[in-house]
Image 1 (cartoon, rainbow, N blue to C red):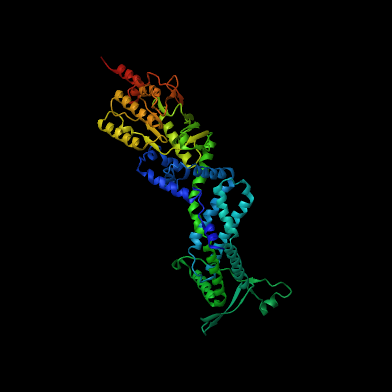
Image 2: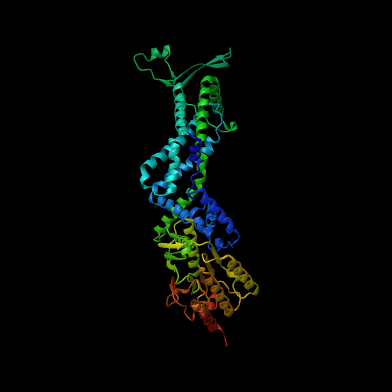
Length: 567
C-alpha cells in the first residue's frame, strides 16, 4: 500500500464536522465568542438540556453549544447522520457495540500485550486479535446488508473507514497470519509426554519433555486392564483438565501455581516451536498497528451524542409530543416559523413530577411563534406563573439545538441561524427597587449593545425592575427601541404591561429595522393558567393584580383576617 493511501485509511472519521477546515473554523469561532457574555448557558439551563441528550459527555456537548455554529453545511451534516440513526434502528446498536468492543479490546487487551512467555498468554493474544477481526467482519456484513438505506455522508464515511480496513493489505495479511498462528498452535501440539526422574525416596529430582503430539493423550490399558476388560471395550481414561488463572501470585493456590509453572516451563522447553509462534504474533501486531485503530477512539463520544439524541426523541414522542429536524436558514434571512414549540427543561420536570404523583399531572403545552419582517421583537406579558419564562427558555433551547445540528422540541421549525444568543435573566432575589442593581443592569445592557448585531437573538426575562415602575417602563422602552433600530430579534418577558403599549407605538418610526409585536399568555375566566401564547395587547388591569400576587398581598386573606379582628 502506498503512503498516501495509508494516510487516507488512517484519517480520523469525524461525525461532527464534514472536514478539517470546518472543524478549525468553528474552533476559531468559539474562541472569538469567548469575550461575549456567556450567561445564556446558565439562563437557558443548557447543562440540563445536555444531560437529557448525553450526561456522560455533558461538558463536550456544552462546548458544541458554545460554537453557535452558523455553517449550514456542518448543521446538515449532523442532521443527516441523526436521521440515519433514526431510520435504521439496528445501526446505533451495531455500531455502538462494535466501537465499544474495539476500544475496550485495544485498551484492555491488545495495548497491554507483551512478548508471551506461556501458551496461555499466547492464546489470550490470539483471542484479542480475533475479537478485532470479528468486529471488522460484522461491520462489513452490516454495511453489505444496509448500504442502500444509509443516506448521510458521515455514516457512509464511517463504514468506508471499515471497508478500507477490510480490504487493506495489512488487514488481510494480519488475518492470514492470525489464522496460521492459531492453526499451528492447535494442530502442532495437543499433548506432551513428560519424563520425571525420582530418587530412592520417590522425590522428583529432574524432569524433561520427551515427546509431543498433535493428538490428545489417552491413558492406554495396562496388561491387567486388558485381562479385566477382556471381551469388553476398555473405558478410556482422559487426563483431568487444568485451568490457568491469571491473578497475583499471592492469591493463587498451590495447584494454580503448579499450572502456571508447568505452562511457562513447557513454553520454554519447546523453544524452537514457540519462537516461531512469537515471531508470527509479532507480525500480527505490526500489521494491526498499521491499521490505525486508535483513530476510531475519537468518535466514541460522538456516537454517544447521536444515540442519546435518538433516545430523547423517542422518549418525547412516546409522551405524545414532537421533535423535528429543523430547516436551518442562513442568518441573513433573519426569520423563523416554529409550530408546536415546547421547553425541554419543563418537559423533564413535568415527566419526573408525573412519575411521582399519580393524583395530579403536569401537562406540557406547546406554542407557535414567527419572526419575520412584520414581527421580530416580542413583548411578552401576562399572568404570573403563566409560562412566560418557560416559553422564553424554550425558544432559546430551540435555537441552540437547531444550530448544533440536533432535532428541536417542535412539530415543525424553519429558523435562521444567529451569530449569538444574548440573555438577561435577573435573579428573583435581585428584583425590586435597588439603585445599585439598576446601575448594574444598565451596564450589562451596555455590554450587550457593544457587540449585538442584526443577526443576534436577545432573550430578556423580567429585566429593568430596579427602579420605580414608571421609570422601568421608560428605560425598557428605550432599550427595546435601541435593539429594534439595530435589527435585533428577541423576546422580552415582563409583567410591566405598559411596555407593550409604549413599544408598539415605535413601529411607525422608519429607523426601526425590526418591528415590535405584543404577545400575551392567556388566562381563563377563573384565573386558570392555560400556558398558551397569542398575539394580543395586554389587559389594562393586569399590572396591578400581578403586583399584588407577586408580593403575596391577596384580598381574600385580608378579608379573612379583618373578620377575625375585634373592634
